[in-house]
Length: 244
Length: 242
Image (cartoon, rainbow over all chains, first blue to last red; front, side, top):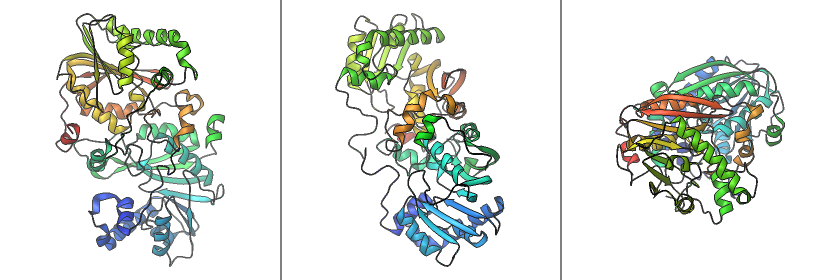
């Protein structure tokens, strides 16, 4: 077993953090554009508030909250916001970023595990630019855990890079990643991993979700924003329940 | 760059070769069931040969020929067969396994690159229990290379664990892989479910037309026909040839 699992990374500088969190689209020195990045992601967060109808009574989970730029919009609107991330450097950054909000708590998590979050306590769970890195098993484990923390009727939003819709002649989403794929980074958590929306909509109902909406956005419409509703706890097969 | 990329394995014994090649379907000591395994995989090869209508005029390539058990059926029927594998240990095993066939060649390859095989020279390509381990990017690179070696009108057969139809209650194909996944995400031996819908979308962009897909439990057997050379976008070209 490796001493450092694939999903753990050390991020020593703000530059590394921003490059990891937002990718290469802001250039090699994103720290010089931090105001612009913050504003862009915040605007995206506001859009999600409207899309998910986040209310002042809602408890919201930002799963993979990264730098907290998107979370800010939830903090302004919701009753309570949980920022959850694997990475302690991200969480330290986000604590500063959101220090003016007293309705926000921060949770360092393990892979597909949210031990601080009680069962059925979340109204809306949001995960941006996280599931785009996930393979089938990641989606399986994480949908199970998110189902656990959501209230019945609660909403889950996330985005995937839809393998059903990728156009190689309009490749903005995968161009950078395919360049670095061949030689060593196959399992790296930073790699974008296209995933099929068809496959997702086959898996989600088996894990207690109802499909609400799929919206394709981004260059070439290759990003699928998926909204699911928790209907029930999944009735997992024994072999999977033991591993989840 | 890593000095030992993910697709290289060290296989010291026949047991390791068998387990890597066929998985654990035959238990932890598959070398003790060699005849049974050989017969089972040969029958699978016969099924593929029938499906692809392999005959004495065909030049065939088996990508990821493994132990050569499946390949044998093609060797009995085709004009020429190219066994292609990343693993020298597999090829050494297969050379012995198929030594009776004068129509069979063996090629050690690198990742998604078959430099010994000329453009447009192959009538039928098949690949068993290989693409079930592939990520999206592996599909791109390998479909491009398969397209290159196939004649126009040539056929490509492969198998995927189809994530469009996977049922949690009957996930035989991935059951043993889920447990070891969390700490072994990038390991090449792990089965990686892949969507047939996504494969249709991708293969159509790389010069293929879906001819047939059949489901057997979680596995989709997919037959594609090369209808044109792959129109590789400029941005991708240097990485294909790297």
